[in-house]
Image 1 (cartoon, rainbow, N blue to C red):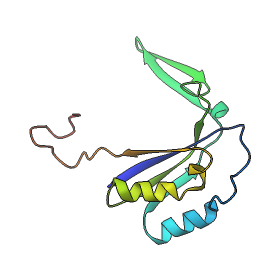
Image 2 (cartoon, rainbow, N blue to C red):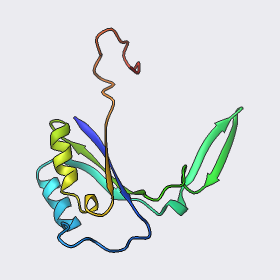
Image 3 (cartoon, rainbow, N blue to C red):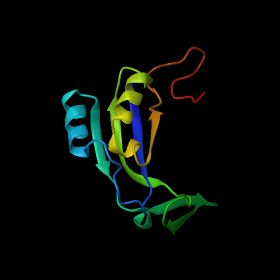
Image 4 (cartoon, helix red, strand yellow):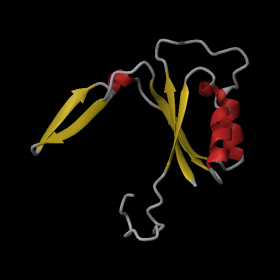
Length: 122
């Protein structure tokens, strides 16, 4: 099952807690195990552009969608057997020690749920 792993950080915190894993070692290990499909850092929240359409008009806002202490600092796409394995992978990420890791499973559009039409949300 694929998971989006959002890596959320406090932009004011520049230190790494003592004993936290090294990011390059984490990437190498997860790539070698075939658990990390793709990942990257993102530009700061101040570089974000929020897009909305209201009454047919495209409205743009500079900056993130919501003001929050922690902001998305990067992401990874994981391909894990189940949520337990995804949690194990996320817990080894250095930012789990200083920030927040959010795991979101991908919606399995290719699978039909009993009683649901293809692509229909629960």
